[in-house]
Amino acid sequence: MSDKSTSTTTSRRTFLRNSALTTGMLAVGLPTLSGTALAKKSGRRPGTIPVFPSDVDGSDAVFYRVAQTGAAADEFVKGPEKAPFGSGSVQFTTSGPGDRLFFYTYDYGEFSDDGPVSLADITELAYSTYTNDDTLVPALKMEVDPDGPGTSGVDDYATLNFEPYYNNTVVPGEWQTWDVLTADAGLWLSGVSGEGSISDPVTWDRLLELFGDASIRFGFGVGVGSGWSAPSFVGNVDDLTIGVDGKTTRYNFEARGNSGK
Image 1 (tube, rainbow, N blue to C red):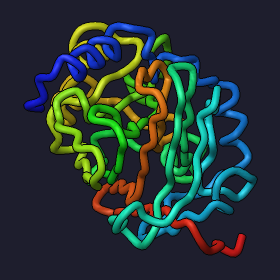
Image 2: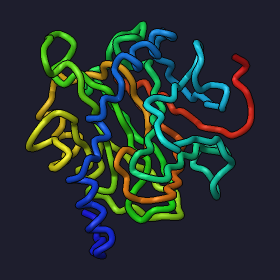
Image 3: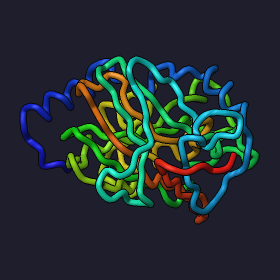
Image 4: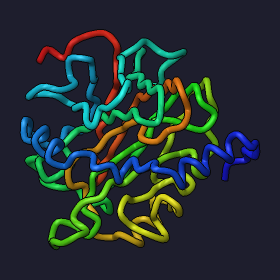
């Protein structure tokens, strides 16, 4: 549990929990996401994957910009300071609550040649962040089917969000690595009430108890914004890691270079 007790942090958390911060409930534009994902279909790629500016968007991209609104923007930069993996990172900026931007890969959902990944089969899930804010950092996000691909109905789509600030201490001006599978409660699903909702986030183990059949349906990645009250937010991401059945992929964001695509 975070030991922060300042009124600034408390008021911001209250705003984020109770206002229109619906990072997962925004109609992140399901048709748009589906159309984007259909531009690329590939299998999962265990190992280290360098991600350069040329690997974002396009028919053979590694990541896609999704739901970019307002002044939200990204830039591949060196550092800041010593990056956790390689020499660079991807930097996200927002200037107000109307800004948002997500980076998604579609290699883990139903558009993948390998089919959707069950959350129960995820063996590693982590990423590193750097922020100028004492509360907010880029969030990890997944588009999931809460009751799994074998059923159909109103629960076929939700966004799963990991936002560290809920019960984990955010330190501005330094890199922090978030192990989502072992972190304190910071996971919530859009469209649900009670435990596991935005007002009552849970740990990974509890999430699997509540939604044991859930799977990644479409995109997976990181993002910023949607109701964030912090003006002039700047946050970086590096070393986004996901393991499925013990086979791990690490995405290394770098400012310079080209994948050759």
